[in-house]
View 1 (cartoon, rainbow, N blue to C red):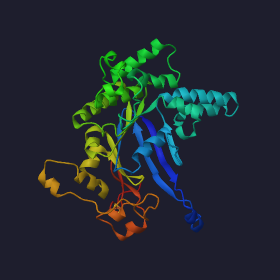
View 2 (spheres, rainbow, N blue to C red):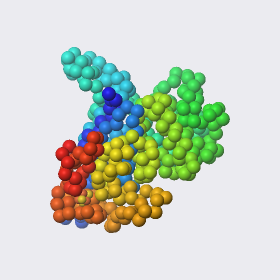
View 3 (tube, rainbow, N blue to C red):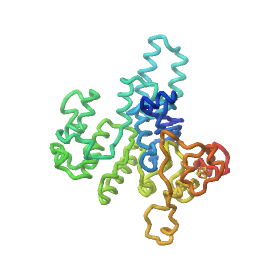
View 4 (cartoon, protein in one colour):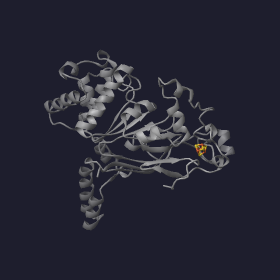
Length: 366
Ligand code: SF4
């Protein structure tokens, strides 16, 4: 059976809203922007799990919350990759030495496995991040223009104290550049970001993530800033990394077309929640949530018949600091019913591994 590498339960990332003087006099209640509000999913080893939704739905914040680049407000993130073993060993022997746990408890902790990412001290989190890396959206912004490609890719090694000598570090940089498809690496190492193309710049960013030999990557809109002709090359590179190096991905995108060709499973996000989740093929061919249906209907297609059936959502996305009651999608939903304005829908099973949160579905509750 394929094992989980990551399990996210009820993740919340809320940001307090700064109140003006008058507002603070009128209302004592602190308001929050609930960027991520109870998100749950798992990612298996070697799996590409895709979060899809329009901008502002909370998908990037979810990725950052998992890596604790923003601190979650609630929920749990458990990491089961091999990298956890180094940490678990450290933590358990520490706790045993300090008499905080018994030998039996230590054995139980080892057997259960899973590192509670949110509970880790900063120093341990830094260690775990070597195995959980991120690829950023914008290769133009994320690379320091004053650093050579070599310095950019070697930086994570320096920060994490990896590589006793410069020669050792160079060996790892060369390998990372090769794995990212920058071949021969020596042709790229001493160039600066402005001396390589957009696609190559994104490959430099990917090499910077690979140099620490991660097991899990959060890829945040990694192709959205690239020309269409280069996108498929970068997506192919990530598929190769999955197949050849066994990497698992949380792939974040607003483009359902990309998610369809690229991912194994998909989660559709709307206003801080996953409203539908399942195997990609199943969700795209048999969508159950009106929002998913609307997203699918506007994916460009050469079929004029399909173009006629587009579902164009009316109205604006509600203010995330002032969520509508009931179903969050109700102000824009073409199928809204009375109950949708009062009660949040339960999550129900649609088919194997496929679930949805919508009052229209009457399946068994999750
Ligand atoms: Fe639309 Fe109601 Fe379903 Fe929400 S619960 S998506 S408003 S039908």
